[in-house]
Length: 188
Ligand code: GAR
Image 1 (cartoon, rainbow, N blue to C red):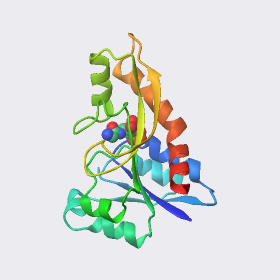
Image 2 (tube, helix red, strand yellow):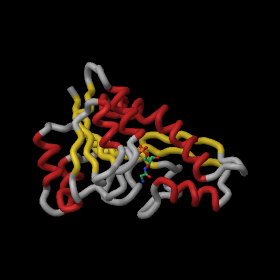
Image 3 (tube, rainbow, N blue to C red):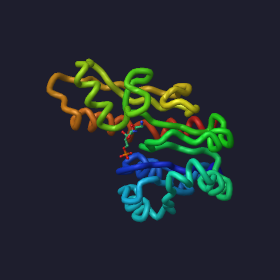
Image 4 (spheres, rainbow, N blue to C red):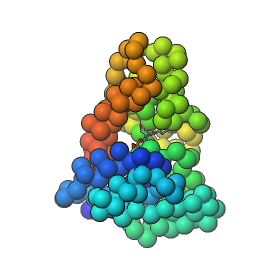
């Protein structure tokens, strides 16, 4: 069995979709969801899904190695960032070389980097009057939004789009493609 840990920071729609997609899968399982904001709604989603969810603080990620230790104890094979908004610590990247996957709500290399997450991305795309946006699924390295691209999908941006309507389009792409891309990548 290939064991996934999902890291999330907020609402958790992607974490939920991925958990549901792999539920009952013979080869891949979502072992746990790790979150870094105490009141993140993803924790409630995890409870409803019956997936173990664990909160870790900034110190646990960056100073005392607790998150890495936890991932190793649970024999995790791949780390999936699903709306996780911190840079992944070096010790985790070193322990999971080319085995950390992120989803970004724009067409990288545009609209990536520090501070470019969630609504900030959609606001910038609309402010620049872009005609299209989309999602990028990529391998994570030590820079924000820079690793090898695995997959992109596009959607139109229309003049009447707001950050909210664009976010809806992006979420639809994420729900449709992210689990499949994870599946293909980890089975390769
Ligand atoms: C998603 O749109 C994801 O692409 C984005 O955060 C949202 C999380 O939604 N990630 C980033 O911006 C990473 N830089 P969710 O919590 O409902 O899955």
